Image (cartoon, rainbow, N blue to C red; front, side, top):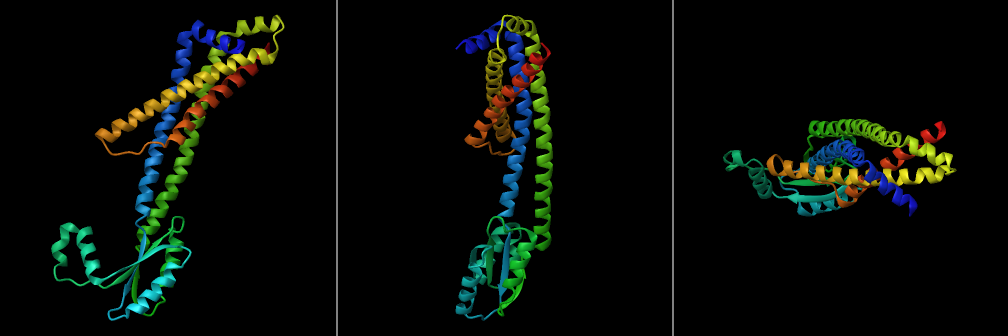
Length: 281
């Protein structure tokens, strides 16, 4: 209880410095949160595009229904395949008109062949796997042609890999900068109480006794800074969704982890800063 009281007194004795520490932590984590928000929405967008990856096998005219049904059962049993659907010529024509509404007049009186649409499971949509499944589907005698947009799939996979690498690199950079700034802010708070620490040591206080109020103070500042950063990030997300484009926000568990990260950073920053001073005294 004494340590909690000392931490509370520290907030009261230097409210401006405490507010500065909390604000610095908040804005450091806010910058990291904005980056995380961009990364989250970019990942969701790529996932939505990736969900459209499919293999279309065109069926020769006059193929018995039984043969197609048996092939669909075989293809559906492939470990990479999530779903197989059969499209009649009429259904294929209706879908083409829906997907290309502005060119619907082009399809008047047109004929499209029946086809099997093969959708792959998550984790099996890379170019190599798509190409391998397409090759296996094309071995059926009644399949005239197989299309899956090879160039489009390869570009999508390349964009996803580049986005992942850039995201990891920038995320680590933002996190490092946030830790450095937060550590420096907490160090300022410790320096402001250097004389107090020296007096405590002179009267026989143990290192643990000296550290405890600072650790509690750093933890509290981290929680407040993390919570404020979360509110700022939510506000930014709401503003963007209302006036620019619809965006997704972090799930509750991820948001709670952000606040916890602020608390841990505040705790570690205090631990390192106080430890350095105790070694010097």
